[in-house]
Figure 1 (cartoon, rainbow, N blue to C red):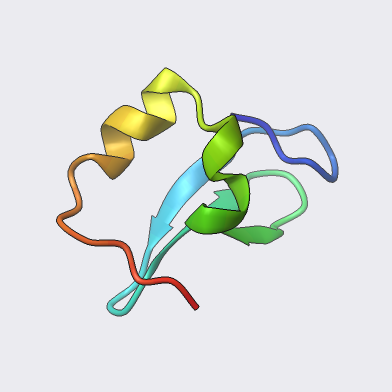
Figure 2: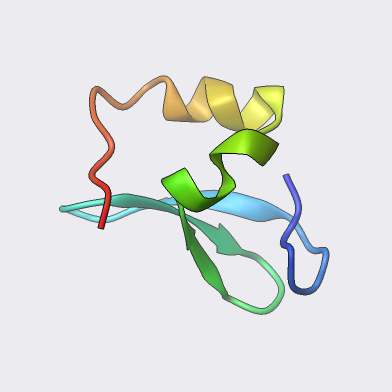
Length: 56
């Protein structure tokens, strides 16, 4: 999945209270619900590992 801002790859960033997607280029973070419609299969497989995702 790619960043909407700079086009670099997004990676799953997990903290103790939430899961977000973080750009490897510009560092911008996206809550999962903001980019859910654009998720690719690889990112979906990673997110499936989490039992719940907390929305802000």
